[in-house]
Image (cartoon, rainbow over all chains, first blue to last red; front, side, top):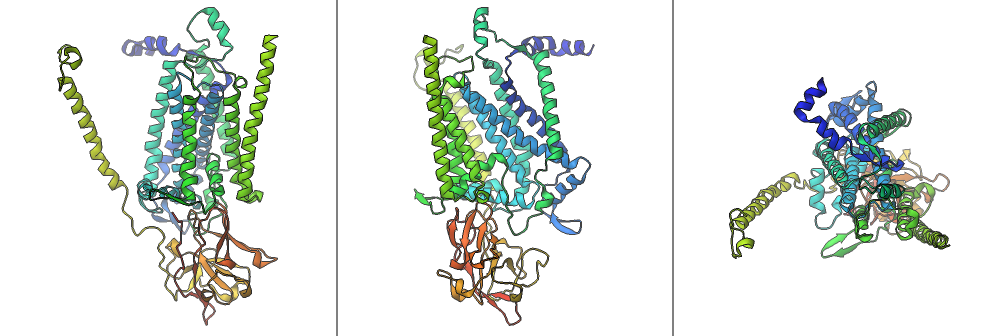
Length: 417
Length: 204
């Protein structure tokens, strides 16, 4: 009845034929992107709940007899609500999972060479999504206005300020004046709940539209079957109903895992950090910033030089140049490893010694930078850690390259014989 | 091409209707967005003095910056060799640039470049704001040999030696913490005797 009424007006049947019956190739790793998408849905839902209760202000108010910033007080009050703290933890865990899922998805695309023609644009859109998600997470750090929030944001403020030429102006633009200023929390709140979600929705839509236009990459095992059919159609399952059911149950399972984690694993305990106060406890950022955090610890303090009147300091190198070069390197991947013909299938990483070993080297490098975030508890000097990191990276790269070459040589011989 | 006015089709050079329209479109887009650039100026508030500006005056009494006795004056007798506390000048604790770390060491332990004229009875004070990225430094007390105690910033593990003018012993901090003069008063409290001898806060 309702379907008929709607169909007469919106031509639902046509929509179903055109979009809902699109084919979705199946492979377990194709759920990584969905994990990111569903985490975003969870983030929006929990974010709406938190947004109703949060107060973006640093005005001092009384909380249980102590004077604390209103933002901090409002988050303490959220934590005291029935289910309040668990919603806040689900929000925080989902952010961490979303960024992890995007990274895993990027790695899947990297190792299977799915970024090659025609998918270069979507690789860049995906990278932007990753970066935007991390900026979103970062702007969320400040909002509870705990000691942790203020320390983390203050570090970022000085990193932005350390940029040559534009740093001073840029830091005042982003942080609404010299941090800590009364304007910073409202500005970050606006970015966190409005600008960045809007950017994410835009980028996700673009990502999906390009995916629908270009079609999904397929497992190579589909190749023979597909050629036997002689068709250009993908082999897989239709979006409706099969893929939809898989996706929905996967979403619910993911939600179950996140709720379980939120229930049992404490996260960002602002009551323990307390409101902003003198004194900085030992604190480490969330996992995805460990790389930059560790790298900052390794840059020697006397590494300062001047180019064209701009002073390049260790903070600029660690906080701006290093992440910038990382993203630039990732962005260049599809333009270095190119193919002339469109690539419909996923490659086997074992058959691509150069790119695969490069990827392994990069992973080891980033892991070592994260380990560098812990040199204080590991009792390693920054200099020693730098040496370890470089040796480990070079070893991982060269050994994996040698092994893959050897494997492919053997495979080649077997094929000949 | 209905109008037959395109340069391509007619082979005519110079301004055509199509080119003129395109030029107008580009100019109006550039103008519209260009005028919005002025907003960036509004969105980045002017400096209010900028960076860390201390308001410590010689004669200000040191008070505890945190803990149960926050706000009450620090007495010389309450500190042993190898102890350190975070301190503010009395009545000026809202300015983070005023935060100092007051340390008591053996008088014989000091080495240059510590300014001995700014120390008194083993008491020495340095800015507590790390010169790297502005976190507050902490005291790593060594109970067995107080001389081996040091100041560390927990954010990125910069290490400073308070016996040697807060020289950077390790980590990413670019310059030492600035020393400031302190002396023990007759009533047993401590007071500042000078301004910071060097820049304070992140050196960016």
